[in-house]
Structures are given as structure tokens and as C-alpha cells.
Length: 264
Image (cartoon, rainbow, N blue to C red):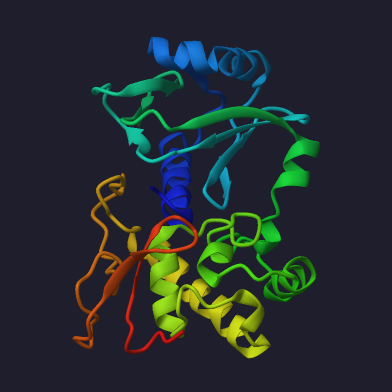
């Protein structure tokens, strides 16, 4: 599934493609999306007045429709842009002389209309590491205030309320970098360790974004080929030739970790 870096790259591509446009229009192409999201796109086209650049919070992409409404879409497992109307393209965005198609092979993309108030209640860019609004001190205060839990680190770090944009590959990579066992209880982490976790998340997520994202089976960089290299996710050994173990952890996802350095 595309994670925060990949969603931000998709948003950048959309903005670059329609740069200098005065207005855009959305058109549904398949019966599946028409049945599922017809009312969303009707509202979108009725209310959108002028072209507005997209932006992201976590894995979600947003486009302001007018002063009251925001179009929110999620790439799901396999969503992404195509300049051609190939198989599995479900809607297109057009201006006077350009067309961009949204491809969603597994049909897990999500589309909705939010009011500005709903957006402000649900999404907080100040705790989104890839946002220009990110504030580490606010993020630390938020975690300290909201997290009184015995849940595992791997479950917390995948929770979008606390770490927007973090997904499975980022989880495995950052826990390896911090030498934290995925099943360690969050409540046992010291302030110093949480600080280190946020710093490593910042490094890994920004490096992934600036390098073109993780080109796994469900994501291909629309600009060009990525040169981001995974260290542990999907691997059999670490860069230091230590064995990598993969297990289903308490977040119900597969996690890759190194028993030699990530001790419980």
C-alpha cells in the first residue's frame, strides 16, 4: 500500500501535471466507481470553482473545492496516476488540453467530501512528519497526552491518529533503525527513545519521499524511477548480514525485524 511518501509524490505529480490550470473537471469512467462514488463526484463537479493544488496529510490527498468543502481521496492498496486510459482507470481529471487518469487495480481507493470543520477535527498536519506544518514538540506533547496504553510499539506506530503516513515498510525500517522490538510495549519506551523514534521517522520518511518512494508491487513513481533502498522490509538479511525474521505482529501485519539488534 502507498504510504505517506508515496501519497505526497502522487499529490506532487497531480500539481505538476495541472500547473498553471485555471480550472479542472472530474469524470467517472467505470460503473463500479459510478455506483460507489457517483454522489461524491456530482458534489465535486457542482462546487469546484477554480483549480486548487492538492496537498496531503498522512496517506490522504486533499483538494479544496471551495471555502467550505474539501475533496478527500486515498490511494488504497494500488491507486495511482496514469497519463493513458489503461485497464483499471476509474476516473479522469481534465482541463482544456490535458487528461490524467486514476488507476486503481484492486478498487480499494476511497473518495469522500469533507467540510472544512470535519477536516480540522480529523486531520492534524502538525503531527504529520512530511508536512511543512510539522512540529516535533507538538507531536511529543500529543503522544504524551493521548497515549496511556499497553499496546505494542508496532500497533501504535501504524495508528494513523498518532503517526499519519506510517505504513508497513516505514514501520519495519524505523524500528530496525531505532533497535526497537516491534512487540515492545509503548509504555516502556523512555522519552529519549521516543525522541529518537521521531528523529528516525523524519529521516526515513523524508529520504523515501525525496528519493522517489518505495517502489513495491503496488507503487511506481509517476515522475521517474525511485532510488530509495529498503534495509530490512522484505529482506532475508540486514545490510550487516544479520538474519531478518518476519512475523505477524499485534498490528495484524507482517513485520520484518532483526532479533540480534531488536531485543524484547
